[in-house]
Length: 196
Image (cartoon, rainbow, N blue to C red; front, side, top):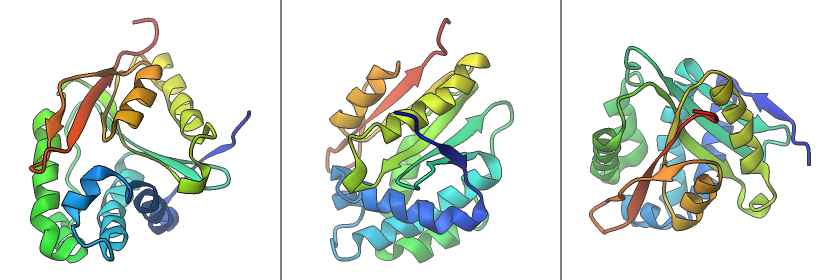
């Protein structure tokens, strides 16, 4: 199956953030991040929009042509990226009473992030009704072609056993999981470029 893939720009930030929130709201960790299920998806979308806008300035955001799936990558090569503008204030505005939980997760991600040059896949998300149709795989393979051609490793944090196993099929190796306070795991995963 051939899947058209487009690079998105700042006008699409809210659409991308909403799609990621819709796809991620069922993940176990989101119950800890936002305990109120009636507010969970909106809070997640607000948080993700900050990061998606940042990726549109400093990284790559790709979507399938029908906008049913998205991938958000940050090239982390050489000098560290600057943080998103007004990050603390924007995070507090988006996350409200649960801001400290999102800050805690940021700290966990930072503490477990590798220091070698690589591209970080911050998000891969497919609309719930379209999952299992190969859209995420198409997005992964699209960027992996560039990574392999340029001898660049990839890194991500898998948030479920299902996603960990998907990424393992694409060459990522899982490290020891780290956990949020309720015990929900994330698996740091690293991929060497093909042929290395």
